[in-house]
Picture (cartoon, rainbow, N blue to C red):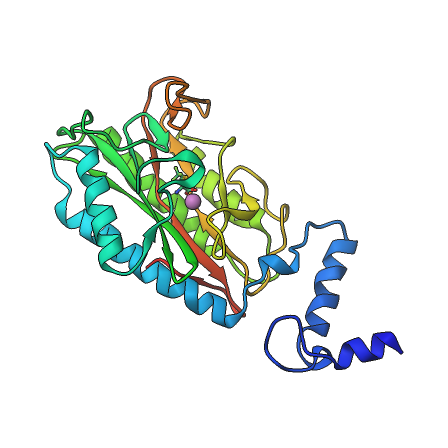
Length: 291
Ligand code: MF3
Ligand code: CO
């Protein structure tokens, strides 16, 4: 009787429809995967249509900010100037830079140059020079919704080696994206990413990954790029997470700069490159929310 009542009450997804004619079959299917031993998402990981719409709007701003950086970035500029550009553009568009004051972080963006893997801190002391490769990682809050994406930029004339790493890192992300579909697994995406990286002799950082995103900056699940097809969390429509593999020229080993507690470097000092999108799982595939 209680069960029957539950089936007639409003669905947890916020559609306003009765549970039995909305997500009841969906829940049973998810639970079935759980019984087979797969990791399954909990309801907090499944966004409503309205929430995805909010993240999409946040993502549009996120992309506009990166476009502004793309327009202005040049040799001779400091990474602090990039911070200023990101901060001002974000405010101008009605957003809030998510990194600012996050866990004690004091800047509005991460700028990771050459052997910096991620979380490079903008500084007046870091002047971009010809040959540098840099990741600019922008994260935006707009009307309470979070989006996160990053791009690489090549400054002046970069070596063919560096240019190839940047190109292949982008392809790794794209090959991962192509694997995202409902009732697939995070590991399908990860395998596509690392297979491509390894084929070029590169390594993939294991100790840091992507994350769920949308209602907070960093949500579950942890998103690895070194796991196998058919493993890791089941993907279902409404999940939103980042694909942001860090691809290294040399060793996958990394260390954190203890002078600031943030910046991650390659252990061997070789180059690292990263591209990032925020992506949603849809009924028939995926939607990139930071395009
Ligand atoms: N944007 C980074 C990510 O992709 C997060 C950086 S946290 C910060 O997860 F505080 F350094 F911004
Ligand atoms: Co991220």
